[in-house]
Structure formats: C-alpha cells, structure tokens
Image (cartoon, rainbow, N blue to C red; front, side):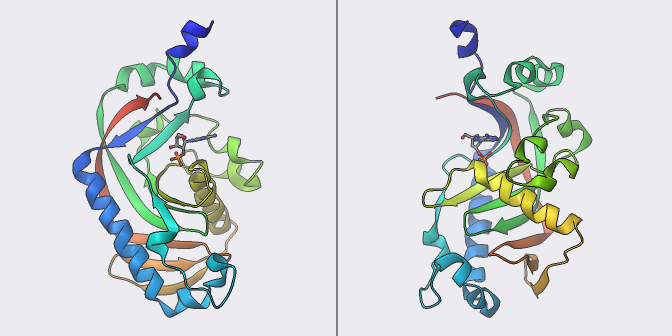
Length: 222
Ligand code: 2AM
C-alpha cells in the first residue's frame, strides 16, 4: 500500500563526506579549465557548441551538482522496478549508515554531462543492483555485456536541460567503446592523468592517482 511505499527513498547511494566534496569539485573545475584551453579540445569544440565559431566556457556550460553522491539504486519511492527487493537486500540493511571509501578512478566529459568514474571493490559490489547495467540497454545496447559496477559514478555537472541519470549512460557508452577495442585518441599526458578522446565530444581522463573519497551509504528522500 501507499504507506509501505513511503518508506522507500528516492534513491540509495554513497554520499561523499563534506571534506572530500570540496576536493572533488575543485579537481573537476581544474580539469574543465584545463580542457577548455587545449588545442585538441578547441578542434572538437563543435561537439559542444553546435557551431564552430561559438566559444564554450565549460565551467559555465555545466550546472554543478549540490550534493555529491554515487547512486546505487534509483527507487523513485518504490515505483522503480526492483526497488522493494533492493531495499530488502541483507547487504543494504547491514551496511545502511556505514562508512566506505570509494575510489574515483577517472573523470569524463561529454556534451551532456561531467562525472567521475567509481571503481567498486568486491564488498561495495554487494550493494550494487544486479540489473543496473542491463537497465541502460535501451540507450547503450552493449551495456549488459559490461562488468557489474561499470555504471558506478558521481555526477559532477549536467548541461542545460539534461537530467543526471544521463551521466551513468555516458560513462557506459565510453566503456562500451573501450570494450569494442576503440583505443580513442590519446590526446595528452596531463598532471592529473592521461586524457583520451573517444569522438562525439567524449573525453576521459584516467587519473594517475585515484581520489579516495570517504562516503556514507545511505538514502535520499524529497
Ligand atoms: P546520478 O546517479 O547520475 O546522479 C536522483 O535523481 C538521483 O538518482 C540522481 O543522482 C540521478 O542520477 C539518479 N537517477 C535518476 N534516475 C535514475 C535512473 N533511472 N536510474 C539510475 N539512476 C537514476
């Protein structure tokens, strides 16, 4: 009944501690600032601006996210498929309110979103829904063939009119290209790591030093 559904949140996820939110936001801003100045980026600017002559300021282009987190299960208050089952999972109950350390291993940018890839440990995968990748199939057909946890990410910003759900789909798209054997175009070794271009405005920065982010596994209502 409706009362029961009220207890299921909008989503479950790992929420970054405030100390690291700042660090991640700064790193992402630095990255966008640097990307903006690269000749290689300017060469492919049309992917973002739609017009060659238009300049793009990436820091303005993306609206920053208020509360950084890595969604595990989007429940939509119980309306989303599998959300009741997820809320009942022993691991979800056991780890609710527990602290973890997430490894942010890459930053990626597309004309729609900017995000951080999260590389999950075996223990963290216990909280990952079995169908998270498969659910992305309508948009990313190869998604189901990617390893469990491939979709794990932190949304850092979205372009005007884009919903944050897009960030995970953009990540899966890049990982699917990698799996197909597309090496991308290694653009440059930056201080933060190596930057690769995958076409159609898709950029991935593999971090030299993954960011270790203390997080709390919890849920979000409202
Ligand atoms: P995000 O995980 O990329 O940030 C509330 O909308 C949160 O749930 C956001 O964090 C959002 O994206 C995520 N979300 C929204 N719809 C979703 C869906 N259909 N599948 C998975 N995550 C979703």
